[in-house]
Image (cartoon, rainbow, N blue to C red):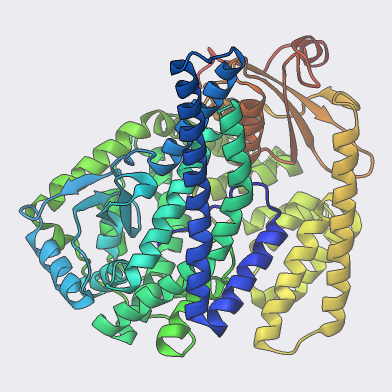
Amino acid sequence: MGRHNNEGAMEQADFIHLVRESEIESASNSAAYRRSVIRFAILGYLWVVGCLVLGLGTTAFVVLLAVQGKFRPVYVWMLLFGLGLLWASLKALWSGPEPEPDGIPITEAEAPELFKALERIRRKVKGPPIHAVYLQDEFNAAIRQRPRFGMLGGATNHLMIGLPLLMALDKVRIMAVLAHEYGHLRENHNRLSAWVYRSRRAWIKLYEHTREDTGAMGMATRSFLNWYFPRFAAKSFAMARQDEYEADRIAAQLLGAEVAAATLTEVEIKAIWLAEDFWGLHWRSAAAHPLPQGPFRSMQALLRLQPEPGFAQDALRRSLAVISDVSDTHPALRDRVEAITGERPGLPSWSTKGAVSLLGPKAEQWMQHFDALWCKANASTWKQHHARMSRWQAHAQRLRANAAYNKAADTCELALIERRIAPQAPVRHLYEQVLAANPQYPRALAGLVSLLSLNEAALTQKCLETLWQTAPSYRPFASAQMIQLLEAQAKQSSYDAAAMRLWRERAKQAEQEQQSFLQALQEAPVFQHVRMHDLSEFELEELRGELALYKVISQAWLLSKYESSMPELRIHLLLVQAPTLNEDGRTQLRRALYDDLNLPGMLLVVCVSPNEPASEEDARRHARQPIYLAAYRP
């Protein structure tokens, strides 16, 4: 019914150990395990009730003394303690109603076919009614029990179903999805699972409420939750995962095991396609459209098509390699399908029509609504991406026109930009051209490796061996690529055990070298071995365009660093000033920049602040003029 949230002060290894214990206990004696979950859940309620009683008793005692004329100044602190404890307890028991889910609320009058299907499933499952249905723009479906009174009980059942999911699946497979979700509300078994589920959400909400509370009661509550909630989440983990298997079983019982298994596999593969192919394709259309284009109409047309066989097979292979772990109460695809059919998942037959018709005559209007919302939310980003792609195209045209005079770095840059504009662009000849003049040029070697097929294993190995020997900063890449190649060969032909041992040892060596390098880099003074940045004007414009997306950044400076242990590595030192952010905000900003910025080489981000290792005076002394000012717009 959801993902666990391992908040609190418990080490991950301890949490995993407790989860494994709960799984063993559940498998050996399910009834005893469920009783132990109930007891541990009640423990949390007893703590809250005990605090409530203590708070009431303390408050009543002080008030009684005051009425009798025996009040003393010290009792003021007792009164504050009692009232604080009382308030914290009431907040724990009743944290107030949750906000309604995002999306468009749908009524039975608007989508009668969808509601008839839900009613058929409800009768078969013998579950409670769905109180509200929401259409969302995500590739997902879920049923959420929305507590009315926190831990005090009472809940309404809300179904959220994504428009993209309705586009991707035939009606019968949408019914399998809905049957799975309704399976979480099934009769009898539902009561305990739903209570545990509501309790988990209530504890999370209480922890969030007390996070910023610096008072004594808030700190006491937070201390208890730091101990209690991770253990409660671990204790109930096996129940939550078993609930997922049970919901799958109900879907298979109602629609057939083959339909349920095919639905799970199709959803998995099409989710990967949306994330890896569709959104990239949609954003690349910004090259021809200065104004944002809504994605959902084109998404509907493409989801009706069968996935390309090579992509589908690779996506299935990657999904089957995922194992069930404690990061999600949902089991991995392999485990879910094998639990239903007893067999390893394979590629399914594909849906062809979609199930948008379940939404009735307003489906087109709602699709337009989501398109308009998406365009509004992404207008600024789309405009900047359009400008970025225009820069790519113009720069690629300049590089192509000057091909006879380009340096090796320019030719590799052209190959990179061509692939950004069109991921399938033929750029192999560009890398080969560079390597013909300089067989050890690392960027060209790495670029060529990324294009070679499994049938060109000898050339791949030659390139990776050269990278290993001549470019220390590329050793993690080389070892990872070579191990991947050897593993792929092992599945098709003989297994080269000696080569695998060699490259696994090299991978360990590369990891140790990289960790030592990073540690030395982090421990060194910020401005050690710095010089003026070496970005081209095009690369600089790219960086400015990316920084413009961060409204909190007022200005930024850029320097290069040199480290003799990896002389071929370009190290960029980015100094950013965000005066409105506190320390936590600056930490989050650095993480976001590391994730989002795409510079050739290695990036170091340092915030410019009196409380940071770099001040504005330092930045101006070493880098002189900022490369970015907030007033700048690309």
